[in-house]
Image 1 (spheres, rainbow, N blue to C red):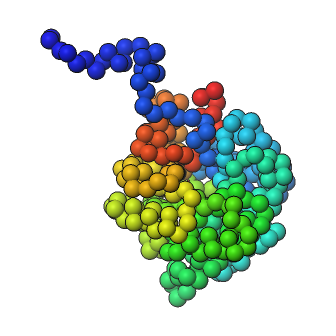
Image 2: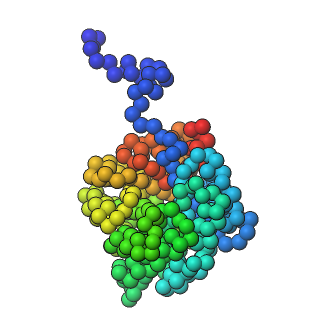
Image 3: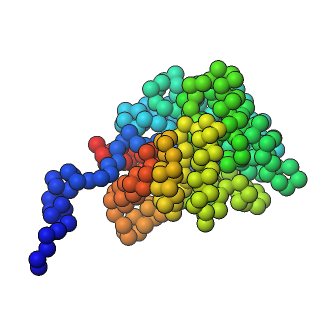
Length: 322
Ligand code: PBG
């Protein structure tokens, strides 16, 4: 054939492919989500998330040391065995599980970027991310509690708070609360475009945090909407978000790309528990190669525009990249 252009020339050898590779996944891109439980020396396997554990604070500190040694720059904490009530009062307890975990990790591994989830679902007896009044998830009252929660994490020494609740105005509320108390250096990683997704299933199993009644569709976004994600992102940036997030990642790669194009702050994506589970299940059946699937998925999320990725594969990937 008489071809002047032969794209295959740039795929001929490993060396050439590495020269022209547009996207590379680095260990520096990873944030490891972790689950905290009460007790001591506990490293309890999570049924719905093979290879993931609930750690007591002492075991969590040891794990964080390991994570830091692997070069993973950040972890994001979720609380498991916490007391629940209808006002989520334990969410802002200065001596609460997460607050104690923050202090312990910061004392032992201060160089790790420590992030915490800010939402009420582990702390409410109904399992919603906000307070419920007459069957409705109320916004402004919920934001007040979220601000107290974020502040209690800042007082314990957290680097970034990560509000995942999707209430309106919570980023601005939290920014004001932090600044007013002298925590101008505490960052906000906003779950700005968080969809009402079935892919959180294994996570809700891990935390036993599934809503007792109803679903989260009055606050989390409709999976059918893309432009609305850009609206949410721009609002959160206006309110003071340092980093914005799209969650889940895989069914929302177009959203990640649109968000990246629409703003000038770093973009995070959350490779959520159900996405993690799909790779594991398919690999267990021999349908895909586990390591290749993990790398392909995470590279795809980066190519779409994510600057950082929350993933349960973080430790494994650090090993693969090494
Ligand atoms: C809670 C929260 C959820 C996740 C992160 N924070 C679940 C939910 O909104 O129901 C999901 C993470 C995952 O599935 O890996 N606000």
